[in-house]
Length: 290
Image (cartoon, rainbow, N blue to C red):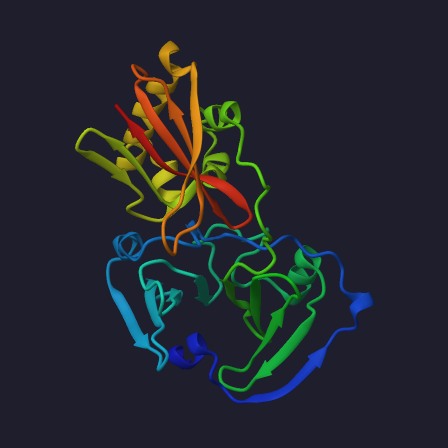
């Protein structure tokens, strides 16, 4: 296997085949997460999740591709792509290699699944591309940000999410304050995954509680640094003084999305909660406690 060719998809094309539009079933929506990681995760958190960098490449236009081994037997790896204009936040996540159960399911699929399994879960691809090295067929879906590589012998050999196509703009209004409070009080990891931005931070005095591993690892571990910060948030928002609503305003910064800020009244143990638009929804990006 030529790992670098596999990651960069620079193999020669031997043919392109299209599926008629009327044969394409409604596919699942674009996906923000893959194997516990989320689009937008910080480079430092990704580094912390793995023991060793396997490979790093820079493209002529300034992109950085980093690959990390999950295991050698079976051979499984993950690759992350960082754009030239933001080399700190991943815009692509890929898991690839031999069949394995050592991964979180992606839309019900794991590496090693058959082509029929992929069709059953996702639907027929909008386009298929045959590669020669590695000898796999790439399945892509119109208006979606995920793609699959199918090996004739090993089955599903790669899953990738790339960019934000298919998410659309988040609703014009941010998540209502009571709903934000309810979601922060949840112990359901799946819900917390959708609640937080991939680079969320909690501030309490001089202490900063950030995402320092895969988003799933951090949120599913009650002893992680971020979950310890979240425990402080839970106590704070349950305080009666945090129930009185303060003002809501916008935070506008150059080259940054417009963020919505919920302020709390003086005396409340919560100072503010900041929501940011990301992957089709408003997500909690920053919480400041007094």
